[in-house]
Length: 236
Image (cartoon, one colour):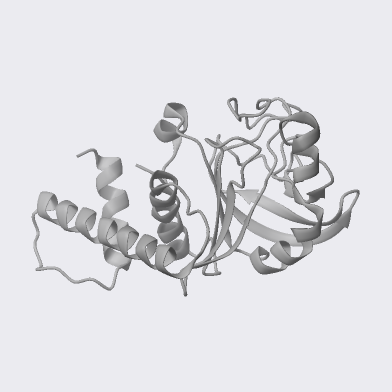
C-alpha cells in the first residue's frame, strides 16, 4: 500500500466512530482503516438506495467523493453536511449531478448539469485548470458566496486542489443557471448546451440548489482520469 493511500485511509479511520483493536503495526492500521472506510461507503450507499426513488451515483464516483469529503470536513475546509457529486462519465443528456444530505443520506436534487464547451460535445473528455481554456476542471471544491451576475443568481466556487482546479475563482468558474441546460435543448440538439467551464444548471432549479449548497459545502466533479488520480491528494 502506498504512503498516499495509507495516509488517506488513516485520516478517515481517525474520523470514524467505528473502533478497532489498538495496534502500532502500520499495516494493520491501514487494513483497519480500509475496512472502516469501505463500511462507511457501503452503509451510506445502502441508506441512499433505501430512502430515494431515483438513480444513484455510480459507486466509484460516490466512493471517491466520500474519501475527499471526510478529509475536507476534518480539516475544516468544508462546513456543511451536504455533498454535491457531478459525474462526467455520463452523457450530458442524462441527469448527472446529485446533491446529497450527508446527515440523512437523502438525495435532495438530481439534475442536468453542463460542462465546458472545450471539454467535449455530448460527453466530457478534456479538462483544464487554465484561464480561457473554456474547459471544466475536475476535483473537489468548496462552495462560497452568492452574487447576482450576468446569469442572475450565481454561486462562486473555490477549487481545493492545487494544479487541478485552484484557479476556479480567477477563471470565474461558478454555478449559475442557463437556458441551454434543459430537456428542450437536448431534444433540439441531441446534447446539452455547454458553458465556458462552469457547471451550469437548469434555470428553474438554480436558486433552490444554490441556497442549499452555498457557504462551505463540498462539490466533487468526477471523471476516471489517471492524471487526476496521480495529482490529487484527496483520492487514492
